[in-house]
Image (cartoon, rainbow, N blue to C red):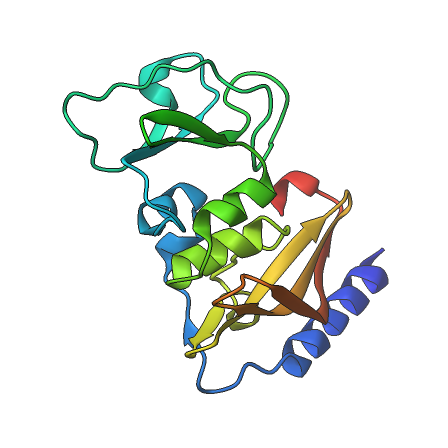
Length: 201
């Protein structure tokens, strides 16, 4: 068993040294590894009088994650959709969705593709991270090869990660997002961590 652990550590260290992050990439700020902190940076693709991000929490006060500046006279009370984006579980407080108001009518955005449509052109780093998350990528700021970025006129490029399965496997990816179309391209940099204890990953 000790031999296997030692071999795994050596293999991990080899992978660390092989994943090279170019010098012109900056570290993604730690706060941006939390999805709820990304929503305030969304610049919607179309004009909405008002929009809010909610979870399907049964307590309405707790359900509101973020809301844009709303006209004082406007209130939107709509039923919670059955499904949303970033589904974590089944039941209460398990997913998020957007409720927006356009031309005095309410509009739902309740899956990953609809969230991408709501974002539209990628205006900033938080939008890029959010869009990447709709494809299963996330930020791990403890490593440069899972938490670095570069912003250019046409693209936002990032080093992100995916964690899958149990035993949990973490893999580094180079992700490139077209700022105008939102199209995402990804290339694996290899698996850099495995753990039998799924909850610790």
